[in-house]
Length: 375
Image (tube, rainbow, N blue to C red; front, side, top):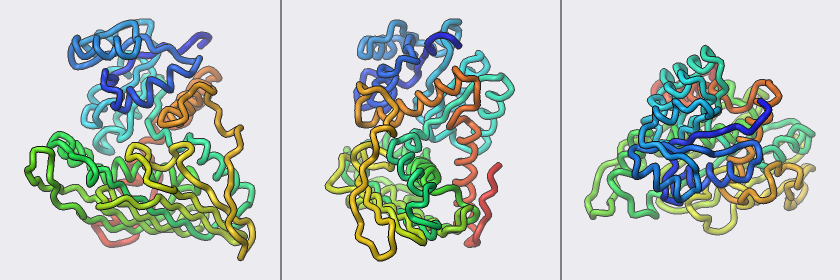
């Protein structure tokens, strides 16, 4: 392609806190490779409001009308995961390149169907696991590759999300958490994908999942049950031989600092947070919120490590918050498309992450160690 990638987006709204509005649109606005020309929504009123809010030229109350536009190269599906398959499949059939937000559908079956349809139609695909595109991830991965910690020995990962405890949540939000199996698929999917970007994939694992927050008081004052497994423990061996231990709490009663410790025969790297981060920023890879400490000798003192400027590839005017990782993801996709080479984070990658989550579920259900077979 010798021109901009012309985009249509589904899931943008006039609400500035919606993920598409807060992250995707500012990211894309900063990238010269893209032109956002159309938005679709459930009805014309919502589409018009989103178009006016974000300065998008064309608005469609019918998604299929947007798909029929011949000048659109790519469709962004940034809706609830319950509708990903429903919206991605027609975009593929229309011959559009397509982005699908994570979680990548609601099941392995849907993920495989979307992947296979994109391959059969010959369109490019992109899945929203943008945190692995963060500057911090590339920097730390390079440090490990260059031998900073020596031979990798162990990885300890601890993450707690207290958004539910802090928010006066609606029944609709509880329904979303339940339907999405948010502990494993949202928090776990993003966290485990970012962890793999740092240190590599698991070879095998064992797991335990429990319901920690069994009920919650919603904004009406009613107390309603919660049934998705929100406390997740994963232990196993990585492909490189190191052992890894992962603790994740989707519904934590309180905030605790993020902590990732990567240890080896020569030294160690610690990635953590300082202070009470805004809930929207409490996931691995958000730029400038994470502190990095390292020591490259046994028994040495930890020292602060700064990310070199070269790891930020997005333009200077890309907001240095949620949009940064998203912009670097789209930037990588555009380069691969223009150079006609395989791109990062395609639907094959989405299926890979689904398979890891399915492996965790099998391990937790069986009580036995399971191999992670990458299909």
